[in-house]
Image 1 (tube, rainbow, N blue to C red):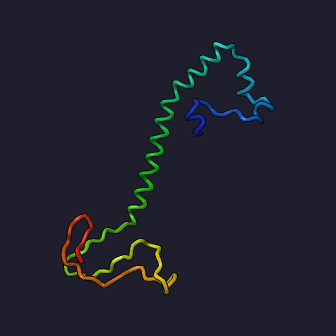
Image 2: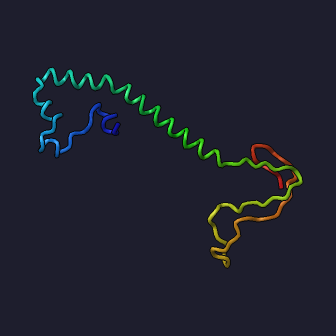
Image 3: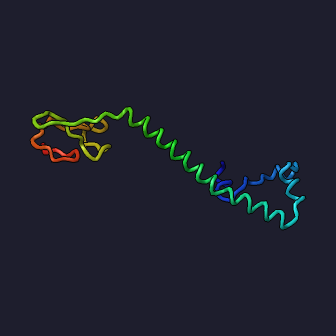
Length: 122
């Protein structure tokens, strides 16, 4: 489904289709005003199911990407007394005199207390 079809219920008509007289365009001119309106309403009735189907496919794709990413993520927990390095924040800042060779880590530090939710007192 194209975004246009999801919004308006049918595919966009390209200028080339009008010039070449595609089957869809030729068939459209055979319809009387009321018949054309009925055909458009029938397309709109099926639009909700198409939107739901497309949304489900989109969510399934996002879940697949999430599973693939989370396979490579490794949880790391630290304990009291462990020696750790602390990241220098904000990342990307440079110390004068070092330029791009500025350190990105400080330490080593010893963990004194675990505060929870990934926070530690060093």
